[in-house]
Length: 434
Image 1: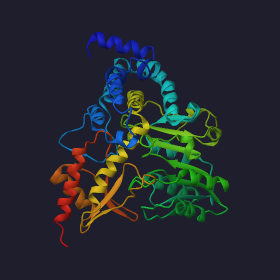
Image 2: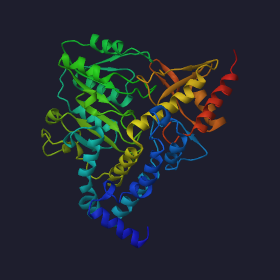
Image 3: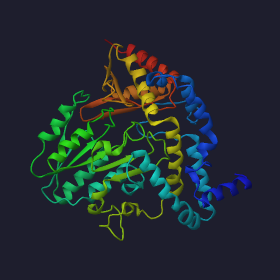
Image 4: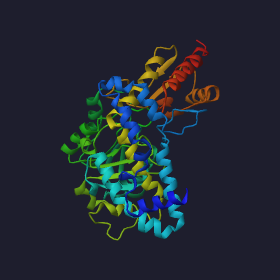
């Protein structure tokens, strides 16, 4: 960074303009271009906008993905657009000029504006939002922070994320909490069936239902609000794991009717890797113990969950530019595009002999993630064939009634990438013996 540029950046940081001012990196690099590109969509339907390749080419150019690899494992972690990477790099440079000063006296002051922007994205109060590192940290905070005793029951599923399953098992082993797991056979296109399964598992000792909004293995969307309404009728609280849905699906946190909510921001929001968010309904904050120490562990201030000591302030502040980028596209438009990309490849391979989809194509039950398998191949064999022969990066899944390869596009994914995937699946399937 040149000295004049450095002085400008320091001035911006010192005045806390940062990502939420007209001097944001997104505003400088993309705002005008995105606005002009969006004008071409004004007279188009949502479906037509999702297919408007000239507009999406503008978005694709904002990423720095390796052209030699087609990354279709965005369900694990997504790359950040260039402006987010630049923000992290600049804040890191600033921090290293005098860490204890710039980190704690300058960058740390940017957490409140960031909290407000995350709350606006989730349509909730800033006093319900804590900023942390990922879904595991957010949800473990609640799982370990609840006052449960031996014999109290928790209902989850075998298809929940492993870190959450292990957290509940730890409470069961250490304290005698009873952890019960449903076992679904996805895809399911019947919300009542899902809700009924949870309800039938309830006993007088049930205290918590843990539900994953979007099942990470195959992308099944769970009817969280309906599950929560049912649970509340039984005086049961609901924890929602929204790792794969926040920043992808256009919803507001209160719409889910849950009591506790955790997400990773480095997935579909494309925030810096290692960023997450915890939301707790305001009247429940006081009763949750923080995962790490705090001077007022029974306090009602959401900030008690942020007592992490030294953390990456550059990563935290880089979230702001990711929010700008996300809003620059438009949340609903982004969801529609990514669902279109999933449907584009999935509808083209579903009729290929020996190919099977493991995810519903009904928009009510899936969005970005879709599982696929080929008869006669293990998920590992298909994953390796896709990468070794076509340089298409996916992930093989073998987990509790699920055996497939997970494919997950993002906004930077091109139609040419997906055409190559369709061709690859067809060619690989064609080589399998009848």
